[in-house]
Length: 532
Image (cartoon, rainbow, N blue to C red; front, top):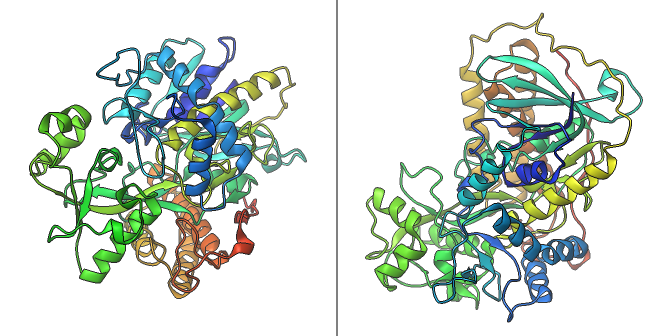
């Protein structure tokens, strides 16, 4: 038995692992190698008040404005007030943040959409990779932390599922993807740190593992979820048939990049006085509008008016990626399209990361803390990972003296299932879900489109449930099952919100309803369990 089982190896999960004492037995589950996941793909950076001209109140105000009236003000203040401390913790861990070229004792700060000041600490344009690699190196030095790579959690184990009245979480069943064997991992405390669900859409900036696993498992275990209709689309992903998940950081616009139509005309000033520096929902919707209005495959992002040395110093990785696909961003505009990027809703938690299920925590993108509201402001996500990872760690430390629940966990039973000879069902359903979610539950929605999506997902869920009951579990099946459930949660949430606010824009209710100010969309859980 472990003291703490952390499902996920991104910034939130690793921060929590490093926040626990050396006497604590910790297991970290990673679906792939430990360095793979959404964190490593984050480019822009992490926001915090680090400059004398900036203030905590200003960062709070910007976050509340971006969240379009749905942020929890207490969560916003808690996160922002812990921003500078989080940066210092990362610096102490060894994260190589970019320094000011005129003063090496100061960090170089950039500005992104929604921010009124330069407050984004970054490591060139590969901040996520710098943070992830640093935290991984720290974790690997701790003998009390066991890293289980190539393991995917199948479902959480709660005492109630095993016939007890107590619904305390006592671990998870995990599939070893290499050995193809499912085993129970028992723990006194379990943490979901699995990231978001953007892979539910056809076009996304996220890696393949972003299938909403933690959100789906928590829902099945008895947790509420909130604000699942607010899926953020990043305005600028490189448009190329082979440029999979190639995000062009918002910092390009922060440093003067302009969005252009094919004829070279700027269009963002027509949509918002902040132009290219408007929050992401506004920029993504403007691009979507222009593409549909003019029948375009893409628009263009241009920073070629800046000196080449400036571009190479600030965006070396973006420059190299664009060049690989035939675009020299120092000489020409590059083609971009919006893509699903971030899950603003998730498993409901308090400021300690606690969920509705005892001994189950959730941190990072899988969680709903109230920080992001109806739209996440750029670079607040990595900040949330660090702040809440540490907060959950402190809460778990305070509970380590609690007596562990004495429960015998049965082995995973595969005696009544067989290997499938119809793997095409998985690939077909996966593709169908992602396509109709993009078409019907994307940047611009209507009630009729959402109802079509609801009808399709209910049919597919029944099909997937039958498949799951009769055939041996694989990692692809686990992800498909979770992806389908998260799609249902997104659709149900979107149908409930009869207004347009932040990332949720519907043509049937194009204006915000003042009566919905401050009211999140909350879905109560189901606890149906399908034991093998």
